[in-house]
Image (cartoon, rainbow, N blue to C red; front, side):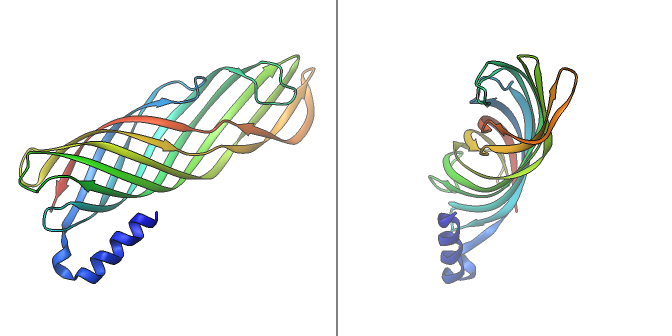
Length: 212
């Protein structure tokens, strides 16, 4: 986040010539979660912002993404630590500020890019844990801090249209959900806090950027 502030201050000090233009971007995601209990999913993102410098080397943007997730498998993080059957479904909506740096010049057909992201993610989820005759049920919405990094390439199709391909790592953190404990078919306790594993995303993305 500090790098975003530094670049923005540079743009203000450099004057109008530093502002090269604006952009909008749409991308498709293929997401593989670091936690093996979570299934791979597809999603997408939309972004917009400004480019800075004579060669559009710096890019500041805001981005909103959406991807579903599904958890299926053993779960061992609860107390007691017996292995539990886990099912869970939800939606992840990251809202991020982003910075990208493009190597090369605006005339290059292919440019390598690196960047960073920081912001927050809304997690809407529902989980069920079964084991030892006891069931835990937890659901709700959470806001979590999110951060990540990216690397990729931008291919110039026309002067204003670019094809982007790359990889990003995005950490949307862990959290606790208020749960209901069910024993012998009846509600045993309400309000138990159930720890939910961190959502860490390995994302392969492909998108189109329109510059103006």
